[in-house]
Image (tube, rainbow, N blue to C red; front, top):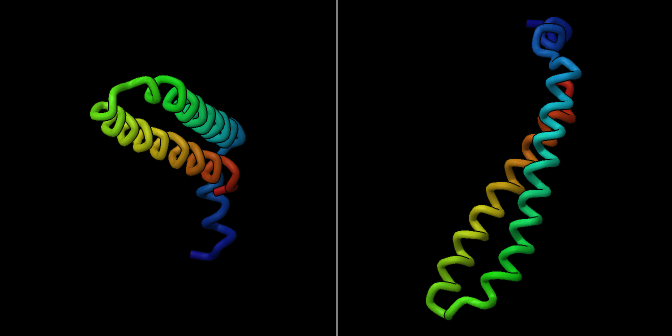
Length: 79
């Protein structure tokens, strides 16, 4: 399949690209907010629960920021 034909059939509409970009921004912002909440609330916990809460929050932060970056790249690309 020639590249010109493939590009025409898989081009994403501007509305879909805007939705991917907006979703990516929201996910990255949520990840940053989660980092801040982790710094505020987990620091006051006891030693045992702090370790598990920190691991959970860091995992969730990784998923949010990684997913947001993926959405941003997908929205930025034309195909």
